[in-house]
Length: 229
Image (cartoon, rainbow, N blue to C red):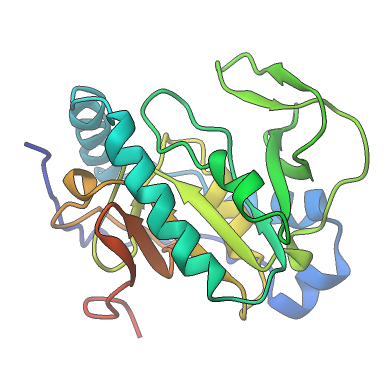
């Protein structure tokens, strides 16, 4: 069973750029500013490491369950006006959302690319792909980058989530930096399975919650209970 830990350690961190400032910055510049948030050196790092170890040891997501999650996302997205959506290419322990690309052709689908400086850029999903040194597939370095400010919906993978939208990532802070500079009217959806929705994910000041959770049981809005006001 995963370990759920609530942390109260005080911290002082740099703040992410405001929405107004972020809109005046290039995607990479804004992410570099937000990158000052991701330097955890507190006991919570150990707690997250234990959670990650537990998640890695959990059973793989079976194809039937992954298909059910994608079907729930399809229904949720079908009820919205098509726009620009940031997806991802699933690793072995993530829900595959690629079948949605052809089922929802009205949406403009983007995929993340990890650049050499650690930032994420967003590229067209039809670009050729390469394998990053971390093992995931990503678009090659071709074509224009789409600014984060133009993205309407973010589909966000994770190793675990809780009902408040707190997310356990892989430790690089890539999605935290992106979500910190997104438009306030955009939507972020954590894509996972019910067995990986745990009681509590440790949250630090630099961590970004998602707005919704998509699992095999449906797409639900995250609770505001327990969030800082």
